[in-house]
Length: 380
Image (cartoon, rainbow, N blue to C red):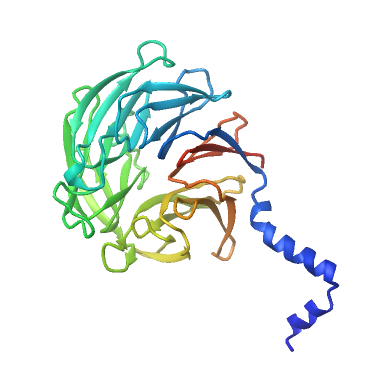
């Protein structure tokens, strides 16, 4: 008989039952101070949530992109009243907000043969609670991820567009290179960043990688994690990591983000495409060492980092949409390990965002998926 089993035998049954109950509840109790606040339960295919002060009242509102409905909507903080931005839309997949401008990708399908990839500019017509003006600015097959980036370091942001696949790619292998492009507001002319990424290009993250004041681009694709940097004259592509080592289409990286543990930068990724793993990359000399800290996601689809408890160490927030979905939080310890807690097991999370939604100076979370849009109030 082991020492541990001897100790358990000497615990009275009532106390043993209590210990077991507490052990089961700990993952939920650990994040009891992130309180869920429902906003909507009638979305169709909730896919992306954006935080923005749409009506300029000093409070961050939430814009909801839902692929299965025809209306792009925003919810007004703090009552979360619903407003329609535009209607008669199909296949909405991603949006980016900046200074009273929304750029929207719609008419999307994962099969390039059925994906028009309409990119539209939406601007308010005076009152942002009333329908906005909409103008098509481009069509690029499988336009999928849109982000603003200050690539010149002058405060004038451009729009990055990362299509999901190449125009001739076919499932399930999706062979071929994928374009990555950008637009300068005003003329909205499409300019090429590169087309070296292979297969499915699912992840797009903007960061000032080298601290030079210019935004850089991280992508996640079948090629893995790659960095794109603009010199002012040309783009440079640098391979960071190969991602999942499995054969394609289970190769590479799906989504990627950057976090900090004190002064140390790390990468966190969902791998492979719509995958089951959360991988953490930490710098080891010139290489990035990959450690899988989770392998039980079901269709992993969102990953972000945020310092929820203000200890100088970012947590990883990951969401998946299969088997009912969940939002999970991973915390680093001083020895380099990661512990997992469960935030929500009742949302098929397609996307999460960080925003101070109650104006108390602490970062809150907002997540969307299926019919649901929720925010999680940070009471730490």
